[in-house]
Length: 145
Image (spheres, rainbow, N blue to C red):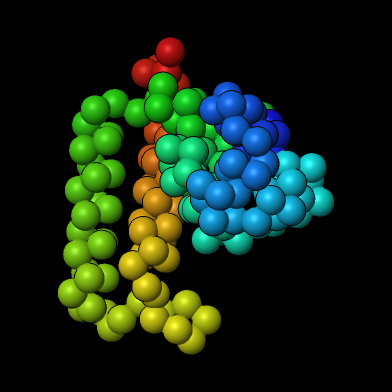
């Protein structure tokens, strides 16, 4: 399921029209329509964040493919894995918040709070994906189910 199909299914599941979702999210109805129809194949992260907030889902949910990466990741990670990821994510974000390596910039501008949150969500998804790939790559065959 691509981003547009996912957005449409969420909107319909919540019994919202394009106009209602536009009013709730602050994203224009034509932009929402373009995403749903596939005319806009690469919507901005800020737009997806507004839509995700309005639909009460995570931005990461928009990046699932037809194999439903998030649920397959959830099935392969243990509670210890989640604790490790959370600990790593907290350490990284603390370093960024304390500006230990300097402020965080993108395209010449310092990240604002909304973009920091998007960055954190993307980083968390990346850490989970890496953890699963490393488990597949480094787990000896005799321990694989």
